[in-house]
Image (cartoon, rainbow over all chains, first blue to last red; front, side, top):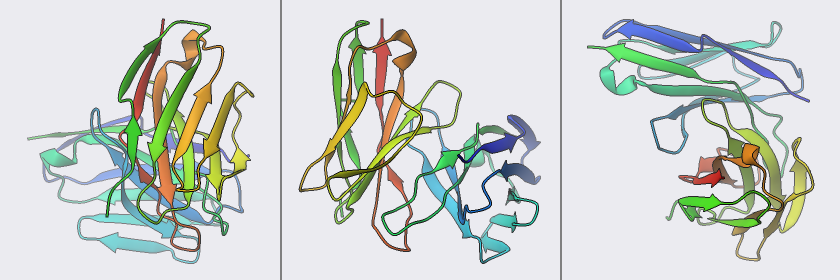
Length: 114
Length: 113
């Protein structure tokens, strides 16, 4: 089955700096890679996703890159703000008609210091 | 459009007991997946229901079972509870097809004592 590894497990950045989280996956059949943000005591919320036919996707301060050959993908947050503090999870899935089954990484706790 | 709702939000059970958790999917979503999130870890896939049938299962024993109803709501049942079953249980709904964003509920925090 799929295995997703995520690094680092914790990340502390100064407000305004960039944050980068990296994930690797094992199953070359995976074709969908979402990133979720989970604040303390709250549900995971999708912040950005990328499909295997795209190498990069950007949404305001957030970008994701995908290297299918190396089987790794990364989340980039620029101009970090205190409200970016949360746990971030990457995931991988092989999308089929009936929906996807996500394999998550272990999470990265991001702390943005004012 | 209503979001994914789960009940109850918190639950305390004794080892050996049985528990049923409930999930109402987002309006129009016909696929429901269940995940177990232990403290400090990422969610782990338990199983998925699509059109009332189990459609894939993760590495969980048979004492974890589920149902999906005609209105696409779902239940997760866990028999013979063990201490290690203590976790946040999340359900996520999605719509079949290529637009497969999964929307998560707020979870049920299960504590087994």
